[in-house]
Length: 551
Image (tube, rainbow, N blue to C red; front, side, top):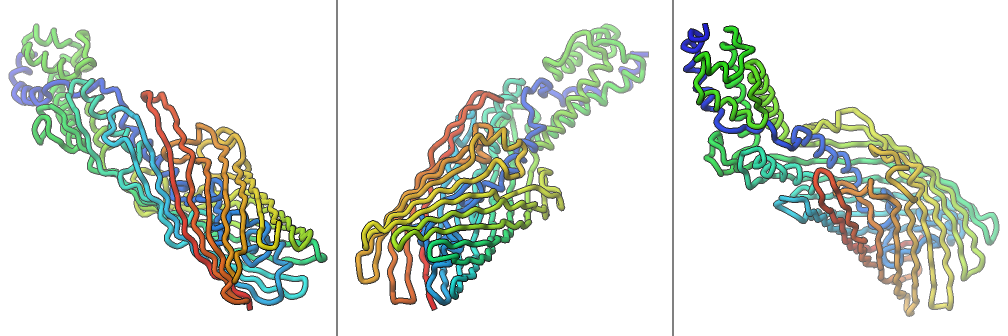
């Protein structure tokens, strides 16, 4: 019986065995089947990546005027920009209509270094660009009452572009050469085309009513309507490797498409599994390869090829049926690798809105000393996905995700030391722990302390309508190591701003300023899948110009 089976099927069987060649990697010790899910984490964190966050909390911008850029301590101002910074102080404006228009041009460079073994690129640079960052404030004061309107980018406002991807992209592919080599397929190189471009912008539309209770105390009540929009475009494609393998269609050692190579291996394994079927159908399912050789069903060379094709996954007590199952499993694994290294693309956007009540109180203690307090309530925001292409499966069209703006308490004071010199200071405290940012982990696991920032400023009046100013801003993040990754990290900052104000005439003034922001470098150590470090750093610069009018 076995002899008949042997002569009847041998030709096709032998061809398939020879196609298998040497090991095809049953014991490959890396998990690229999950590559899509790992890379999807990069996309999921994109909400924070585009955020300008030059000044403010985890998601909130406080650089909301040209005056702030030249002197980042504006919480006790008594001009029209108080629509955002000190709405209660608007009760002490001069009578009439006030208008402020300004724009900032912001540039930020993000650098991420990685010591992950085998990376072709060890430093990844992304640029955040916001050429337009406009703010508009208008207020009308009559008697003790003031009504004001503000329009500004309260969150985000930039577009982040990582032309070479990020370490979380790269390291998933960098493991291919050493892992294939360990499995018996000598491979030394890889290449890929990975890029991501994300933008985030939360517009704020604010209305306030301010009222002077007396010559000293002003109060305000208002609300900010927030319109949130995010967009993400990215791809990971053309993953290539250079396996020294006879089934490398480009020639052993030459670069070949990884999906193409794995598909070829899968086809070879499938062919070997299919060629075992006649022996199994003929009653040889429970015979080992040695027994098949002894009965003359296959030759010793053919048995060696079958055993070698399974590599370390082969055992001499395996039956023909088990050998077939091993090849079938191998084929499924290779098909999984082919799918996991195939091209991926994302084109999605998100939109949503929320309302944040805003309350303020101002104490005009004297003409020289002013103190202000402002509290912004949390804005609960739910974003809805609008997806065109989502190969990573993380942005299903129509799904919703939380993206709150946190509550914030601001305290500020200004004091005119001498007629020409004014000092100012302020502090902001963000209630991050109470906001749902849509994270996979709850806030109490990734945030140890709420975010805060503090500022001081000095302004000196030179004369002839010209004053110069400078200031310092410190921001202190409260996130812990679980929060930090190349995908999303929050760094404490030190910023210095300087500029001038020129009173062109009694009804018009120009503000100009420049601010330079340095981020404190953070290094995080990883032990999985191997030991390596990642370093996160940024630097930002902002130029602003604004016009203030009084009618």
